Image 1 (cartoon, rainbow over the protein chains, first blue to last red):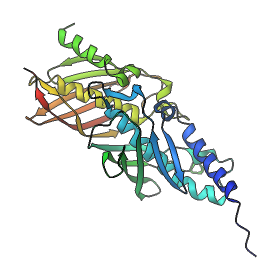
Image 2: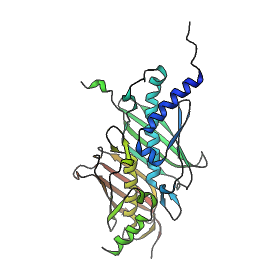
Image 3: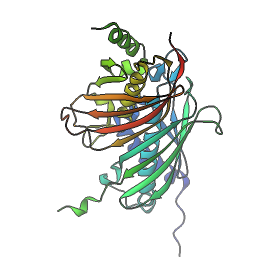
Image 4: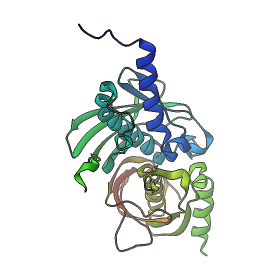
Length: 167
Length: 141
């Protein structure tokens, strides 16, 4: 006989705890104030507006470096989350701290399409290729209107290797 | 210290994000700019090693490229990033300040082309390199 499905609260709690742990470990994500909304396995990054993020006080506009950092954070977390997901669902994640290691950015190219307005920004990443060693990610950032991106980026990442390779 | 450097410093300090990260403009002349940023635990991207997040390196390089454009002898009035690519060649050593030098090597009426290198104390081995294009908005007279 099949096992009855887990209660939805148990599943949600497990997923949210893993996401909180993944994001909470990184000081720079905390510094920028980036948080993640989760719907199933889909993540949306949120960058709440703060005065310290301004790069052009005349316009005013968000600093280009902040935009780039926000998209890179979204990419790295989305990649880690995708690799974590299977283990999380099969219950193999318990006590495995290596699962929370981050991919390393090889290169990252940002298109600045519009100036970042002084309000909240959102981003979602799509993993276009995910191999054992390398991954390619495309990420889109928007503010008020999902159709009007203020920035997009493509990046390549080196995936963390399992520690069991080393003796 | 030349007036140009003074003005550029004040300009840097007027940028809230650059000020918050402690960026200091040390050189600016003829389309070349150098900016340093101290090591800061708030910028850590990998908690296991203490290595600074790539995003913080981006912020430094973007600022520096923009400053290089503004210092070009053709006197652009303002500039904005069109695109910026960063190659991360190695992890920055934890505890060390980062320094970026950007060069605006070509400029047209509408577009500026810039490249930049970021180093820590081991200046022979760059941490990251960047190439970018920037808009040219108006001209100062």
